[in-house]
Length: 542
Ligand code: DGJ
Image (cartoon, rainbow, N blue to C red; front, top):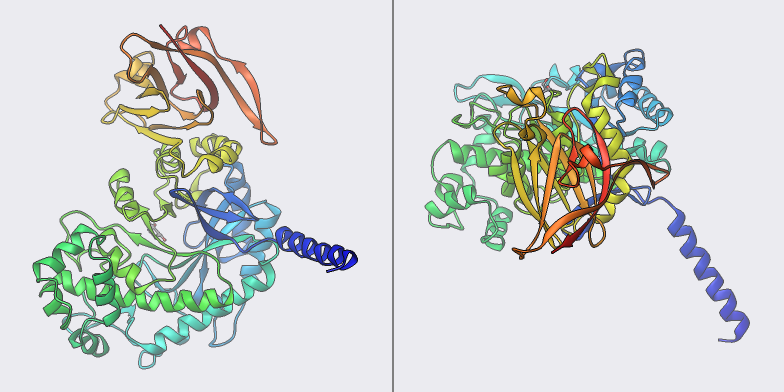
């Protein structure tokens, strides 16, 4: 190649590279070390979210009072339903006015959106199906219970049910692509909502009965064989008890009982949802997930919304739903760690699309993001507060907004931990670099009159180990003491402790902490009732 050609060739290559680099990629999930990050506008994005009450996004007028509240709580993302009945009031006649308004208002408020596709199923039921679906039961059949009675739940065994939902979702994704692929206001999609079978564990519609008699699908058998050592123990045990069979109908491979009814339904719910997601992603491939109503202990399948994307069914959901990016828990029960541990046990990302908007959410958002390196957190009915400026969640989200770049940089590298305390769980010990940290609920110090209360409000924090002996600490109501690892003679001291803020991603010290604030050098502390970011450096002495 002569010199002039070389110069032209490399200039074109560089130009093409710059163009492709500058263009926004569609929001997507990306692995960093052990963690999965959501990438928006080519940057990791941590969802500091809230989900709207079910009917709030049905008009622009109602939403006018909502935007200032959620902005006042420092949310960066709002989870908003799209209602099938309003989107497609007549078959093949789509009304995108509400979708457009929501996206425009979100942009004005500097907010991202996760849309929730309330379509075939919302909390088991099919109440969001348009009337042309509801009124034509022959074409759009419903599930039947064991007595042959219909319920207002579309059966996942009907192809016309699938096609109707799928076409609407395709149109929705096509439209979002059209108006949003440059700005990326919409960053993820939740498809359906809390899918679950009621009041029996299995559908007894003739189409369902026919499938139940058939052989267990080959795809599931292949999955079982390929993932034999990785299946969740609850499911592995069922397969093992029946002799690891690889041929036969559902009852012969997994045994007769409600547990098998539930496995069967989970497979078909997931298959149905997967087809919708696949069609939607063909239009515009945003990350897409499904959420679950967590089952109550001691209840049998059929007594709780069964067969949803629950931890004991995750292998079925994953095997039948390869295009579903992840399964997500909704929290209306207190066993936060228990359920989250179950959701992450196969290395999947954690996102919490719903948590009851109670007094624990501020601390739990810190724990979810610190301990599980979650994609984000989102209390339900976020607009129900009348005092957004006083909400502890808003105070925490304000801090998390500032420190997100540091969190994103250190995710997936064993450099971050989250802690969560109440009266029953007051302390944890964790090693970072050369130090052993003891984290405690601030009320353990006994300095605050609330320490005498029977119940201690939840507190939480995130610690990030940035450089050798340097740490960021963000949260509320947590105290830390430190000692060097592996030495009986050496001690650890605080070289420097500062409280501050990030301005344009740059740390600015507002207060140098010493004296009583560090108990004369004995501890690092964010007192109960206060919310802050601290940066501190440790050293050892003999
Ligand atoms: C969980 C559902 O997913 C939400 O849409 C809502 O119905 C809440 N339960 C309870 O209000």
